[in-house]
Image 1 (cartoon, rainbow, N blue to C red):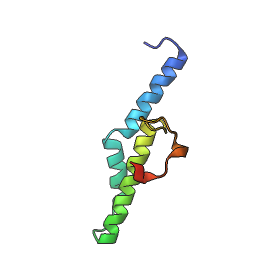
Image 2 (cartoon, rainbow, N blue to C red):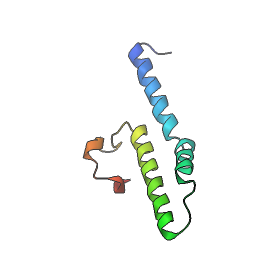
Image 3 (tube, one colour):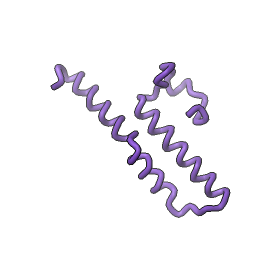
Length: 83
């Protein structure tokens, strides 16, 4: 299936990145993080920020810390507002 150990390692990394970025994993992580937070305006804003961070982290994990369009790495990102 894989010609070399390096090919196998690359395949395993790809499967891992995909598994932690699929919709269920980030959603479950968000639901756990947001449990007990109410519905006031401030609390909804807090939930929103939690969701943004989880979504950004899942994208970065999937794309291996680089922008898929520019190739810029994580260090070059201005912040979560770019997602």
